Image 1 (tube, rainbow, N blue to C red):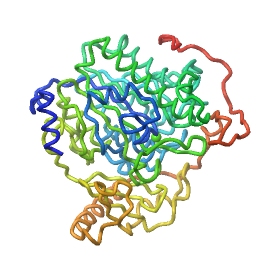
Image 2: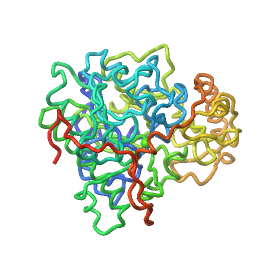
Image 3: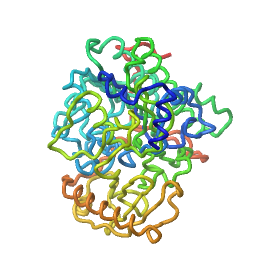
Image 4: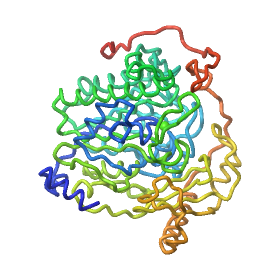
Length: 504
Ligand SMILES: [Ca+2]
């Protein structure tokens, strides 16, 4: 792979030391929610229309083996923001509204590091690193390094259309007219154009809600999918809706002459959800989907662009969401925190055509994962999975005391080795034909697991309140079957977002 990157560097006329000599870049980090590995044209989807992301990918470095740090939302975002595998921090699962589970201020985020290096910082979109969102007893985005934030705790309510649960810098905004992707992109463009400190480099984290349910899609995007079933029109159109918003972000960078100096990262927080309402997300050739430790749950699109500094083309080097924290520290000239254990590795060598050396393999850990495997590592072509010798998780929304005890004590069992180069769908356990690799990686996995398990904090028991589920407006179909319409609690008034341009 290194040879391939070097070839690309030469073809692009980029010297291997260019990234090394560059000034700290401004950074636009774009994260999608439940966008699967196979959901984009540039990752092989022949049906879903994503012209803006595909055009972006053509002038970028596109990773075929990019992973999120977890198969679902909150833990994945924790890994992305902190560079640490989420079980070290106690983000054991997605965080419902009002849950005591949260990322504490003792953790250091990308935004905090870049802010300390003189960056202006903003978050637009989904947060999902706390349960008590915009309440005084847990840290909020403003406490975690974001100077400006326009965010929801988790998903938009009642769905992507006219959401009423956005908060800007601590002030609830009430119902906003428009669709989530447009609202988020508009706020980001407005911040870039009018609010940020233009004397400073910036870190802008755009965290789209699409295509996580509950979705809603504007007719013009649904109509791109003709007479397909309404659930497919809504799902595929929802991705195209996000793609159009991404295109607006790219245009805004260009209009402000920021496109050449800005490092842009595009990725997703986990694999496709493939629910009964919307079963048509795609993990491409990968096994399983969101919620599983198999690659369908964790391998995601990953595209990085920095004009003239990062080579264009394709890389098959495995990377993971926890790599972005040390990468951005490195490019900004910041020293990563030395008193906490980081799991990611700076990707800078890859940008410079050098091999990437890791201290330990990519790592995943999820007690409540669907399927048998709960823990995994990947090193080069090899992936090793393990089961936990424990009862299945009892509570997928709340916090169960016995589950917490299991997280601290469960042993690993039934390890399996897969060759991801020759068996992308994880069908054949090759431990007997590769005994040395199996033995070495098993030792590595057991050591990492013990370390993370020892560090992982325990939360007090908490009963799932179902706050969001009472407030969601679901579509009138369930896959291809119609379901009775249920009316959620929805505030009656719609107002324009007073600080941003009109959407339509
Ligand atoms: Ca997600």
